Amino acid sequence: MSAQKQLYEGKAKIIYTTDNPEILLAYFKDDATAFNAQKRGSIAGKGEMNCTIAAYLFQLLEANGVPTHFIDCPAPGKMRVRALRILPLEVVVRNIAAGSLCQQTGLLVGTVLPQPLVEFFYKKDELGDPLLTRDRIMLLNLATPEQLDQLRSSALRINQILSDFFHQCGITLVDFKLEFGLDVQQQLLLADEISPDSCRLWDQAEADPDRRVMDKDRFRRDLGNVESAYQQVLERVQKGVEGRG
Ligand code: UDP
Image 1: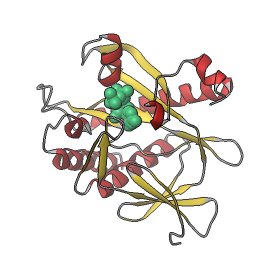
Image 2 (image 1 turned 90 degrees about the horizontal axis):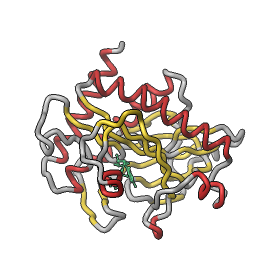
Image 3 (image 1 turned 90 degrees about the vertical axis):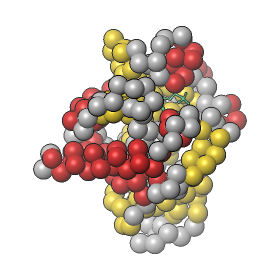
Image 4 (image 1 turned 135 degrees about the horizontal axis):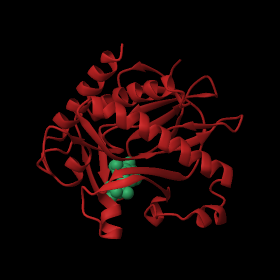
């Protein structure tokens, strides 16, 4: 199965059609963007690392009963996925306050939330991906009430599985962003990627607020050692998966 026509180029991936209309091929790029693409750069080896990390995490989720778009990785940095109609929503789950939650509420970075917080953002670059309310989601027909409830419970289940797994890897899962899509049977599947680009991951062995960062915040905030942080996540995830047998 080879790539045919380029369907879409996003900030971190290029999506190609294949000879099977139900299957797409995702090429993970080294390009990195932040602050709605106002900051641009490249992280050497990121594409291959994120693809491998995402593949491990999708398989972990599948093994725990969470349906995802993942099929396999035919080559480094390339992932075969099921073709879906992606919902224009970013589903963010937070365990610890960071990023936009702190900017918008005044909560201090690092505040442990009493329970995981699920938030929905409108996936629309030209509007700056604004925070949505349930009523706005209904108003804009972005999801049905049933789909919204399903997104929320699925996101919380994914958070449970990933938080436990990362904890075993010595990493705190602070927050992360998910995207979902519908297949032809209108089944909701987890899509996009889960990687240090889309998660905040803090090294449990580091107390220092800058040194503990193992994710794209190293790029966003010019903390340096971005590649080695991603590599460290990859190695720990790999070990964590092998440790589970
Ligand atoms: N996130 C993402 N893509 C986006 C926006 C956020 O992957 O377009 C991730 C981000 O890496 C973090 C979580 O979602 O793990 C929450 O991000 P937040 O809302 O705090 O936004 P930020 O201030 O980081 O842009």
